[in-house]
Length: 275
Image 1 (tube, rainbow, N blue to C red):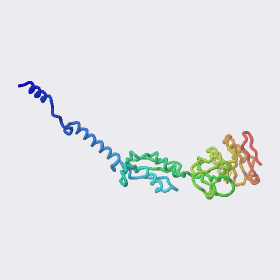
Image 2 (image 1 turned 90 degrees about the horizontal axis):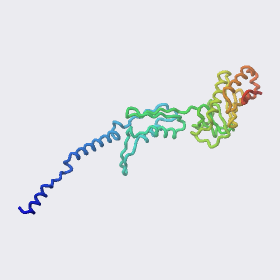
Image 3 (image 1 turned 45 degrees about the vertical axis):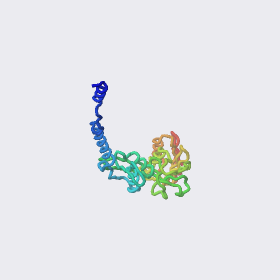
Image 4 (image 1 turned 180 degrees about the vertical axis):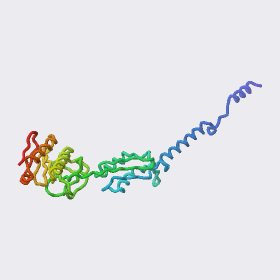
């Protein structure tokens, strides 16, 4: 045999036929893993197993369920892909952000003080609403009209337009400008002072409050239904001022004398004046 023939035979022996990738075990393994992954993605994001189909709303009074449902459903329905009129939407519980729903509810409805949004058993969204409760009516000035008055909660936040007092006392503050619903218009310590005075007068002397006027950041004038006023310091000890008020009304100023009373001034630390 010639050298050329031997050389060619040796070369042919060394060459191995290439296997098709479709026949390799790696191809089928990757295919199987890819299929499993696609199934998992479908089950988690698109199947009805984890799709929110029930929304439970409680605690709302002035805000309707339909209004809260609209915000909730807009957040639940996630657009994954769209092409023209064709869209892929997911309602998966895993894509629903409870905090986003809460923040949008609070932003949209100032009358709502808090909202607890919880996912329940993969298919249910529970929303518990806490609406603000009016403890007073806040007005920009004391011009005896309700053109610029709002309901005020215990945190000092205005949350709804008011056309009358509706058995609430009125809080005036001529120093407050740019009234915007949802904003804080009076400090909480001032609210606490008024409420404590209100409770003291009502429980001990059957006297109600008509209105309160914040004259400066440090002075508060409270007018009673007996038509006399209480002058208080917002930066002084509240309990001390209440103690002095009780002492005067119990021991020095009789119910008959209150008929001619003009004011009680509690602003000074160790003294109290009345006229």
